[in-house]
Image (cartoon, one colour):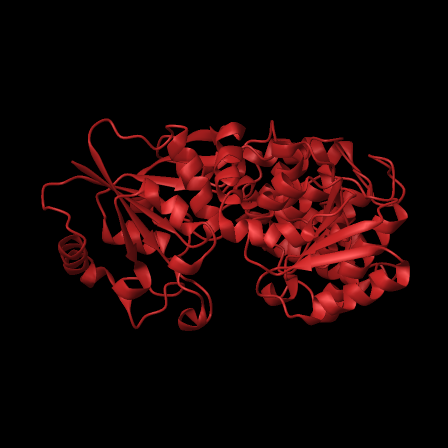
Length: 467
């Protein structure tokens, strides 16, 4: 009998896996025993509610034969940063197999949330001969890998299972695995399967208790909080201003009933500031900090619009439930994102290219509507992926050149790529090469930033493949 080990760290991820199971995307050719390995990756796992207390877990766990805590298995190590030493792997495999009731001759397959970080990569290294199925539950799947993955892990990846959140856009996250190996298959989870699982969660008593106070006579606009300050993307003050901007734009668009779904870990001051501003603006305001998936609210509250910065919920609202979704502040967050290879750049770019502002007609180009490519963020995503990791994705250079040539000098190129990177990578829109570039470098009219960009290009151009 095959033992299928599935690793999850969030209820949303677990719901995604359950939808994939229901759709037959993780089926085994013979008898299978499904083992669910739960991981709590918060800074202080001991202070986090147990999985048994999380909304919907009791319903979703029924699809598995056994539930095991990864935190208990590796205690006192933290799941986020623990990785087995190479010399310990054979012993750990025997110990975990014995502890989890896996026989020495039983084949094991892995279903992991992220192959580039622990605990997914740790499990892949411990069970070093097992095929790997990777599932993605958000927009980061459309961008590059954040870090290098050992080839002994990459070559065992069978497929990528993901929600089709941006129809027509192909995930790039595992394309690096194709070099020297076969390309992992891409399997999109049917929308009906996802909606069915979220409906299952919505029917639980805990979800009903959360949703009931949010209902009103008028369909509300839902604002999605992401707690970006905790990730170091913006400051807490900037995030408060961002939420206030979302509220004001919702009111400008004519919404008189607003629901704020705060991130469960966000401080209460976020909601207090919005509540006061809503009262000043004369709109009905309700909020929740409960750890319920936004999709449960979409299904039960049926909002008239969903507003956020670059939350995955914007795309599940639009794609799964047909609810209009709008972005606010995306361009400013994207412009200030550091470092350039930050993996949040791709979700930001998708929201920037594919969504419009709530207070403007769709695709308005003057104040933040979809600026390029209409509803197709694919060319921008492929361009950014190449610019972020040109050595890992050289096959995307032609796409990047074509996109940059079409939009040379535009605001989208200045905001998303920048002159220095264009010059270093010898892409359209960069500083000219050859003697002219050297003359520009010595020009007193050229800004120090441009001179530094030219020096960087001249020093690094040989290190980057250009053909």
